[in-house]
Amino acid sequence: MKAIVYREYGSPDVLKLEEVPTPTPLDDEVLVKVRAASINSWDWDQLRGIRGFTRLSGFRKPRNNILGVDIAGVVEAVGKDVSQLQSGDEVFGEVSKRFISLGWGGFAEYACPRGSSMTLKPVNMTFDQAAAIPQVGALALGGLRYNGDIRSGQKVLMNGAGGGVGTFVVQIAKSFGAEVTGVDSAEKLEMLSALGADHVIDYALEDFTLNGQRYDLIIDVAASRSTFDYKRALSPGGAYGVIGGSQIRFFQTLFLGFGISKFGNKKMGTVSPKPNEGLDFIVELFEAGKVAPIIDKRYPLSEVAEAFRYFGEGHVKGKIVITM
Ligand SMILES: NC(=O)c1ccc[n+]([C@@H]2O[C@H](COP(=O)([O-])OP(=O)(O)OC[C@H]3O[C@@H](n4cnc5c(N)ncnc54)[C@H](OP(=O)(O)O)[C@@H]3O)[C@@H](O)[C@H]2O)c1
Image (cartoon, rainbow, N blue to C red; front, side, top):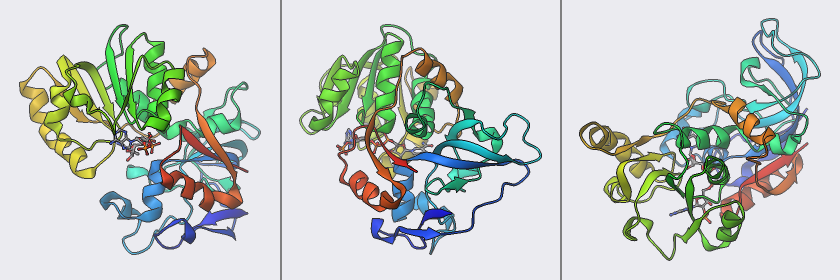
């Protein structure tokens, strides 16, 4: 089969289209003919290998040589322990197999995820849409559920609202009747308003932690400020869940958040849902017309390197999909 392979960390130039053996499913796995995959910031970090976490897959060289955690496709064979799926099923999901998202392989004609990690794709959802959902959908839902269910009228702020996670958060929070503020760069604000955001903030022009507003829930994929800055922007009883951003800020909230949450009336901490957590609920929201993935661009498998270059420029609105 054809796959995009990388054997060293680096720029998108290290990604090569190669012919590799088609994988064989283990007893608990399924063989999926991939129809679409999508790029996540996780893949971008794994490609470059420059952040602490990302070298867990191999300190000098990557051990998982095919990137791509999100796929949508058609089941072609099932392992003997998989009873819930059969050949011909149209499925999607995050293919990560173990702790810290190891074992990918989505940027290829075939992948072998565990059967339990695949969800049946609704007929009215395209393969492209399905591939754009799994990782960011789970993270978005994890953020929105960080302090219990969203209630109508709650003030929710999404920091980094224009990317994969944020575009889901804005739509889902609005569907629950929240008052939503989206923070991102100027070029993404029009899209956020179109998605239903009540207020938008250009992070280059305004620091939302200093504008005097207070929020019931802040979800952050672009943490860059001190934990105490974010705490100041929370209303009494409010919560701040950090999903990503600066590693220093992420770990600062991990450690300080415990004490702040235990001894005060605000909750602060990190959000790390399991792969595919809540995907069934996102399917329900999709079928009810309350959420749909935002796809900025599509690239064929042979142009994955080009797709990563575009991702790296930081202009992506929502997601980039790879089509097979
Ligand atoms: N916790 C976990 O278990 C886990 C697992 C996997 C991934 N992650 C994290 O999840 C996140 C994925 O988010 P995503 O898919 O939405 O990423 P994304 O698509 O890259 O979107 C991030 C958005 O943040 C914006 N941004 C950048 N700097 C900002 C700032 N200072 N203030 C406000 N917005 C800013 C970017 O806009 P511009 O580029 O235009 O500035 C972009 O629109 C990443 O942070 C990743 O590290 C966490």
